[in-house]
Length: 115
Image (cartoon, rainbow, N blue to C red; front, top):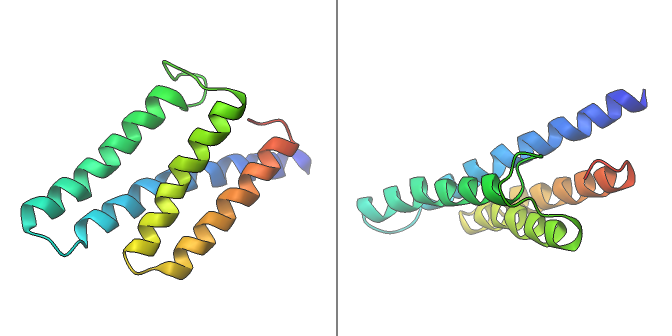
């Protein structure tokens, strides 16, 4: 049973990672700006975040893998961008739920030594 729960926590983490990219894309495409700016933000924002994730946090394959407090700070900022992007695009409740899900997932990963 615990193995299934740990697998669920890992799956939630994956979906939260995708959620950050989708949230930032939505935020970028819904800005009250010109078409070019919206495209740059909607495509460029997720690309920048995905690059940062790949460089510093992508499970065991990151070029500059972060650990400990640095990893916690990076994840908090990265997932915070997703929650903030949802709120900034008008989905405040979704942003709060997203932040709560990340915090619950992070607590369980820490408790079960999955970090």
